[in-house]
Length: 231
Image (cartoon, rainbow, N blue to C red):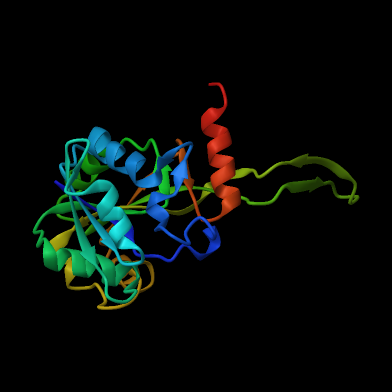
Protein backbone atom coordinates (compact mmCIF):
# COMPACT_ATOMS: atom_id res chain seq x y z
CA UNK A 1 0.00 0.00 0.00
CA UNK A 2 1.13 3.54 -0.76
CA UNK A 3 0.90 6.74 1.29
CA UNK A 4 1.12 10.35 0.15
CA UNK A 5 2.72 12.85 2.53
CA UNK A 6 1.58 16.40 1.77
CA UNK A 7 4.77 18.46 1.92
CA UNK A 8 4.19 21.32 -0.50
CA UNK A 9 3.64 24.15 1.98
CA UNK A 10 6.05 27.02 2.59
CA UNK A 11 5.96 26.71 6.40
CA UNK A 12 5.78 30.48 6.84
CA UNK A 13 4.83 30.31 10.53
CA UNK A 14 7.92 28.22 11.22
CA UNK A 15 10.43 30.70 9.85
CA UNK A 16 13.41 30.87 10.23
CA UNK A 17 13.47 27.06 10.58
CA UNK A 18 12.04 26.70 7.08
CA UNK A 19 14.31 29.26 5.42
CA UNK A 20 16.51 26.50 4.00
CA UNK A 21 14.33 23.37 4.19
CA UNK A 22 10.72 22.20 3.89
CA UNK A 23 8.60 21.74 6.99
CA UNK A 24 8.89 17.95 6.70
CA UNK A 25 12.59 18.20 7.58
CA UNK A 26 12.18 20.32 10.70
CA UNK A 27 13.73 18.36 13.57
CA UNK A 28 11.64 17.29 16.54
CA UNK A 29 14.03 16.30 19.32
CA UNK A 30 16.76 15.87 16.72
CA UNK A 31 14.82 13.95 14.04
CA UNK A 32 12.86 15.29 11.05
CA UNK A 33 9.06 15.18 11.23
CA UNK A 34 8.97 13.02 8.09
CA UNK A 35 11.15 10.31 9.67
CA UNK A 36 8.60 9.88 12.46
CA UNK A 37 5.82 9.79 9.85
CA UNK A 38 7.40 7.19 7.59
CA UNK A 39 8.21 4.89 10.50
CA UNK A 40 4.63 5.30 11.82
CA UNK A 41 3.13 4.59 8.38
CA UNK A 42 5.20 1.42 8.03
CA UNK A 43 4.68 0.14 11.59
CA UNK A 44 1.04 1.08 12.15
CA UNK A 45 -0.29 0.73 8.60
CA UNK A 46 1.99 -1.68 6.77
CA UNK A 47 2.80 1.02 4.21
CA UNK A 48 5.55 -0.03 1.81
CA UNK A 49 5.81 3.05 -0.43
CA UNK A 50 5.59 6.80 0.21
CA UNK A 51 5.23 9.66 -2.24
CA UNK A 52 6.08 13.15 -1.05
CA UNK A 53 3.74 15.67 -2.69
CA UNK A 54 6.29 18.46 -2.53
CA UNK A 55 7.55 21.67 -4.05
CA UNK A 56 9.31 24.17 -1.79
CA UNK A 57 12.94 23.08 -1.19
CA UNK A 58 12.00 19.57 -2.32
CA UNK A 59 15.60 18.80 -3.26
CA UNK A 60 16.44 18.77 0.44
CA UNK A 61 13.89 16.00 0.93
CA UNK A 62 15.45 13.96 -1.86
CA UNK A 63 18.95 14.54 -0.47
CA UNK A 64 17.82 13.30 2.94
CA UNK A 65 15.65 10.30 2.01
CA UNK A 66 16.78 9.31 -1.49
CA UNK A 67 14.79 6.38 -2.86
CA UNK A 68 14.15 4.55 0.42
CA UNK A 69 14.06 4.97 4.18
CA UNK A 70 13.53 2.39 6.92
CA UNK A 71 12.63 -0.21 4.29
CA UNK A 72 10.00 2.04 2.67
CA UNK A 73 10.22 3.00 -1.01
CA UNK A 74 10.33 6.80 -1.44
CA UNK A 75 9.58 8.98 -4.46
CA UNK A 76 8.58 12.57 -5.15
CA UNK A 77 5.70 14.30 -6.92
CA UNK A 78 7.13 17.77 -7.48
CA UNK A 79 4.86 20.80 -7.91
CA UNK A 80 6.14 23.58 -10.18
CA UNK A 81 3.83 25.94 -8.28
CA UNK A 82 1.82 25.45 -5.07
CA UNK A 83 -1.21 23.30 -5.93
CA UNK A 84 -2.91 23.08 -2.54
CA UNK A 85 -3.68 19.81 -0.80
CA UNK A 86 -6.22 18.69 -3.42
CA UNK A 87 -4.02 19.57 -6.37
CA UNK A 88 -1.01 17.94 -4.73
CA UNK A 89 -2.89 14.68 -4.16
CA UNK A 90 -4.27 14.77 -7.72
CA UNK A 91 -0.79 15.15 -9.21
CA UNK A 92 0.60 12.36 -7.03
CA UNK A 93 -2.27 10.09 -8.12
CA UNK A 94 -1.49 10.80 -11.78
CA UNK A 95 2.02 9.54 -11.02
CA UNK A 96 0.75 6.46 -9.18
CA UNK A 97 -2.73 5.57 -10.39
CA UNK A 98 -4.56 3.89 -7.51
CA UNK A 99 -7.81 2.00 -7.91
CA UNK A 100 -7.98 1.02 -4.25
CA UNK A 101 -7.19 2.43 -0.82
CA UNK A 102 -4.26 4.71 -0.15
CA UNK A 103 -3.32 6.77 2.89
CA UNK A 104 -2.80 10.53 2.76
CA UNK A 105 -1.36 12.54 5.65
CA UNK A 106 -0.50 16.16 6.17
CA UNK A 107 3.23 16.58 6.54
CA UNK A 108 3.11 18.35 9.91
CA UNK A 109 1.47 15.69 12.08
CA UNK A 110 2.95 13.29 14.62
CA UNK A 111 0.58 10.72 16.11
CA UNK A 112 0.39 7.20 17.50
CA UNK A 113 -2.90 6.56 15.68
CA UNK A 114 -3.38 2.79 15.12
CA UNK A 115 -3.60 3.20 11.36
CA UNK A 116 -4.33 -0.48 10.71
CA UNK A 117 -7.61 -0.15 12.67
CA UNK A 118 -8.58 2.91 10.65
CA UNK A 119 -7.85 1.00 7.43
CA UNK A 120 -9.87 -1.99 8.64
CA UNK A 121 -12.89 0.18 9.45
CA UNK A 122 -12.64 1.82 6.04
CA UNK A 123 -12.59 -1.58 4.32
CA UNK A 124 -15.52 -2.83 6.42
CA UNK A 125 -17.59 0.20 5.32
CA UNK A 126 -17.78 -1.43 1.89
CA UNK A 127 -16.69 0.78 -0.97
CA UNK A 128 -16.98 4.20 0.66
CA UNK A 129 -14.91 6.95 -1.00
CA UNK A 130 -12.92 8.22 1.97
CA UNK A 131 -12.31 8.15 5.71
CA UNK A 132 -11.02 11.06 7.80
CA UNK A 133 -9.23 10.98 11.13
CA UNK A 134 -11.01 13.30 13.57
CA UNK A 135 -9.56 14.34 16.93
CA UNK A 136 -11.07 16.27 19.86
CA UNK A 137 -10.79 20.04 19.60
CA UNK A 138 -8.31 21.44 22.11
CA UNK A 139 -8.44 25.12 22.92
CA UNK A 140 -5.25 27.08 22.36
CA UNK A 141 -6.27 29.31 25.26
CA UNK A 142 -6.92 28.76 28.94
CA UNK A 143 -10.58 28.73 29.97
CA UNK A 144 -11.97 30.85 32.81
CA UNK A 145 -14.88 29.30 34.73
CA UNK A 146 -17.47 31.66 36.19
CA UNK A 147 -20.73 31.15 38.10
CA UNK A 148 -24.13 32.83 37.75
CA UNK A 149 -22.93 35.75 39.90
CA UNK A 150 -19.98 36.28 37.55
CA UNK A 151 -17.54 35.18 40.24
CA UNK A 152 -14.51 33.36 38.84
CA UNK A 153 -14.46 29.81 40.19
CA UNK A 154 -11.45 28.36 38.46
CA UNK A 155 -9.22 28.03 35.44
CA UNK A 156 -8.45 25.24 33.02
CA UNK A 157 -5.38 25.42 30.84
CA UNK A 158 -6.04 24.59 27.15
CA UNK A 159 -8.89 22.14 27.76
CA UNK A 160 -9.99 19.50 25.28
CA UNK A 161 -13.63 19.31 24.21
CA UNK A 162 -14.36 15.60 23.69
CA UNK A 163 -17.63 16.18 21.84
CA UNK A 164 -16.20 18.72 19.38
CA UNK A 165 -14.15 17.22 16.58
CA UNK A 166 -11.62 18.64 14.12
CA UNK A 167 -9.99 17.27 10.99
CA UNK A 168 -6.92 15.28 12.07
CA UNK A 169 -5.19 15.49 8.68
CA UNK A 170 -4.96 11.73 8.01
CA UNK A 171 -7.16 10.20 5.32
CA UNK A 172 -7.83 6.87 3.67
CA UNK A 173 -8.98 7.45 0.09
CA UNK A 174 -10.29 5.32 -2.74
CA UNK A 175 -8.01 6.64 -5.46
CA UNK A 176 -10.34 5.88 -8.36
CA UNK A 177 -13.37 7.56 -6.78
CA UNK A 178 -11.71 10.58 -5.20
CA UNK A 179 -9.46 11.44 -8.17
CA UNK A 180 -12.53 12.55 -10.14
CA UNK A 181 -13.37 15.15 -7.49
CA UNK A 182 -9.92 16.59 -6.84
CA UNK A 183 -9.15 20.09 -8.13
CA UNK A 184 -6.16 20.78 -10.37
CA UNK A 185 -5.33 23.56 -7.92
CA UNK A 186 -7.02 23.93 -4.54
CA UNK A 187 -7.59 22.17 -1.24
CA UNK A 188 -9.23 18.79 -0.69
CA UNK A 189 -10.74 20.10 2.54
CA UNK A 190 -12.70 22.87 0.78
CA UNK A 191 -13.35 21.46 -2.68
CA UNK A 192 -13.59 17.66 -2.37
CA UNK A 193 -14.73 16.69 1.11
CA UNK A 194 -17.93 18.81 0.99
CA UNK A 195 -18.96 16.95 -2.19
CA UNK A 196 -18.35 13.60 -0.49
CA UNK A 197 -20.40 14.69 2.52
CA UNK A 198 -23.32 15.55 0.24
CA UNK A 199 -23.38 11.96 -1.02
CA UNK A 200 -22.68 10.32 2.36
CA UNK A 201 -19.28 9.13 1.13
CA UNK A 202 -17.01 10.40 3.93
CA UNK A 203 -16.47 8.22 7.01
CA UNK A 204 -14.91 9.49 10.25
CA UNK A 205 -12.42 7.74 12.50
CA UNK A 206 -12.56 9.42 15.94
CA UNK A 207 -9.35 9.12 17.97
CA UNK A 208 -8.57 10.35 21.49
CA UNK A 209 -4.90 9.34 21.59
CA UNK A 210 -1.65 11.16 20.95
CA UNK A 211 -1.91 13.65 18.09
CA UNK A 212 0.07 16.83 17.47
CA UNK A 213 0.48 19.18 14.56
CA UNK A 214 3.48 21.47 14.09
CA UNK A 215 2.35 24.78 12.65
CA UNK A 216 4.43 27.21 14.71
CA UNK A 217 7.58 27.44 16.81
CA UNK A 218 5.37 27.24 19.91
CA UNK A 219 3.76 23.99 18.65
CA UNK A 220 7.24 22.54 18.09
CA UNK A 221 8.48 23.50 21.55
CA UNK A 222 5.39 22.09 23.26
CA UNK A 223 5.63 18.82 21.36
CA UNK A 224 9.33 18.41 22.15
CA UNK A 225 8.64 19.06 25.84
CA UNK A 226 5.80 16.51 25.93
CA UNK A 227 7.94 13.87 24.21
CA UNK A 228 10.72 14.37 26.76
CA UNK A 229 8.37 14.29 29.76
CA UNK A 230 8.44 11.08 31.83
CA UNK A 231 5.52 8.74 31.18
